[in-house]
Length: 64
Image 1 (spheres, helix red, strand yellow):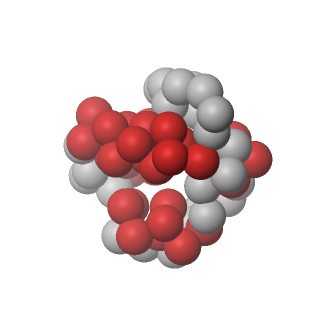
Image 2 (image 1 turned 90 degrees about the vertical axis):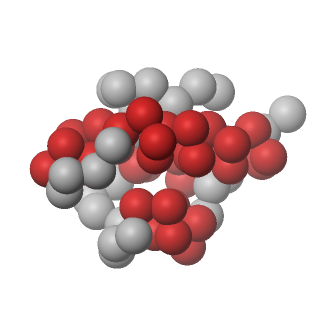
């Protein structure tokens, strides 16, 4: 599984990343699961590439 611009928060949860870990990385409560991670980052002034790398590391830990 690869975190991309079109990846939504629901995908991350489905892939096995916990809501708590997602919230730690984004520094906020988890938004609507249908929201794209990239859109959340843009709307909140966060760097998508940084968040993407952190989320990808978590995805890699929980997926084969």
